[in-house]
Length: 253
Image (cartoon, rainbow, N blue to C red; front, side, top):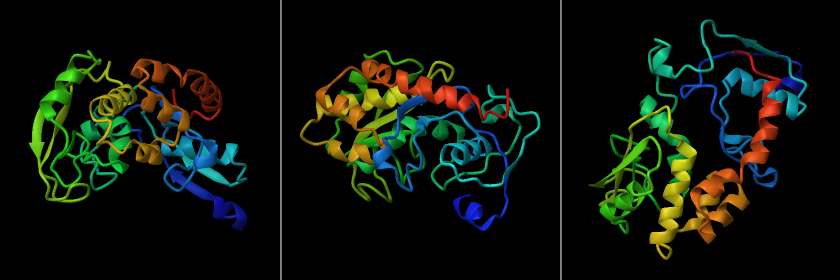
């Protein structure tokens, strides 16, 4: 869109569903001074928008002046998850192989620039978390006692065949969604991060968490051991502002 606007060439977007629905919004807003190719704009981790809607938001807020033409979907509603569309799943990324993994990704994926495996190089990326220095039963027990809605944690051992800790046996846990309607990936992600900080303060390289989190305030809160729910609550005012801006570009009910 940036280059097309400069060249005065129209941009067409054949819109497609957000696989984890278009209602829920979660996570910290990216810090403006830390934007990058990975974190392109000041939006939350889970934005609840389609690709076409994101294009409209970027075009408006970044003042591209692009001739953006979104070809809307027929029959999609914001409340729909991908398995309610009757469409065939196509991996949007090689390691995003299922709706379950897409659901877990907003919370679990934030860990992957740190010294923790998120299951790349296994059959279930983003469904497991581990490291050679993690004692899976201890971490899983701690998190299960937290009564986090919609999720349970099962200890396991695994050996990634690629990425972080390639060919090194790791202790860790399988993250099992038990109720997707109450599950909150960003709350769960914060619970895992705070647990790692609490149980493994000398092993977990927490500063690298910022690379995908892109929010300094949230990182500092995890470092000092704020409760996950307090961390989530700290996002509310910025998320409310985002909701207002988002409401102006929504294409679907």
